[in-house]
Amino acid sequence: MKPKVIVYHRIPREIKAEIEEKCETVYFEHLNSPQDPHFLQELKEAHGIMGTKLKVNRELLDRAPLLKVVSTISVGYDNLDIPELTKRKIMATHTPDVLNETTADAIFGLLLATARRISELDLYVKKGQWNQMIDEDLFGVDVHHKVLGIIGMGRIGSAIAKRAHLGFDMKILYHNRSRNFEAEQKYGARFCSLDELLAESDFVCLMVPLTPETENLMGENEFKKMKKSAIFINGSRGKTVNEKDLVAALQNGTILAAGLDVYQQEPIDPENPLLRLNNVVTLPHIGSATFETRFKMAKLAAENLVKGVTGERPPNLINPEVWETG
Image (cartoon, rainbow, N blue to C red):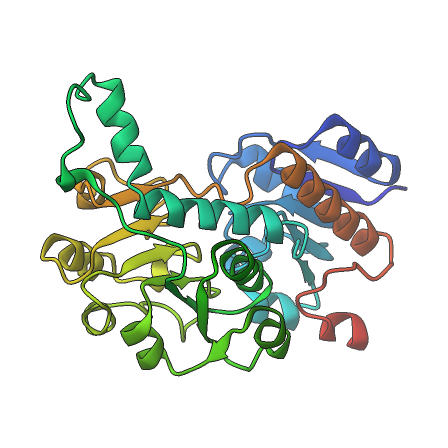
């Protein structure tokens, strides 16, 4: 008998076929609520689940007595209760690496768009306001040869550093839990304290995972340490930033501008004051959102899922101790 799995995310037909070859599969392309009665009924017999954003916590796990593996289609996994999964000897997996370059493209594009006010000026032209010489009030700032401070020099942070150093002759500062000697050698990155990075950088790019240590990492005190001419970019998670403090810093000129792909509440509340500020460029959390990369992510998540429920070690275990002691 094939193991039963639930896929609660839209995936390509080819990947569906790969899963169905080994597993009895139930699909929920739009799982609107984890309390969906149909979902909860199927969960009772599921050996694996695959998707994104679903909160996998103690309450959900209590309803899944046969669960062996949780496969999230993302590199981040703050929606998974890893200690609880580990305690129950349930494997947790994610999809690192395949999205590094695509996400770095998006975040560096956000940096460029914010610095050169591209979305604001696009609207200016489309509204028919370009009828004379461009006023200095619409000028942006240079990116080349400036100082980029990266908080979180992991795989994506390193890919951003590569673009900045090799393409724009930028000086790279970084703050991380540990030294990244490869980034230092390849891109001339300099390891420094958070305070030093904030004080010296023209662009501050936040790329840390969401953990208890990084929640509200950027707040009033941190924004005050930045240059008034500095631009803040957040490509990590919304809760790593105190959003009220960010709004205040943008409104009162503590910093020049911000480019954001993530928010404390997603989708963002239409009444959020960030959406009324001209010095903010906003994206709808689309760092990895290209057809090619999302296909690769789904394929890797499917491999994690199928191997986990058929007795093989998934390639991207978050909690390898489950396999080692299982």
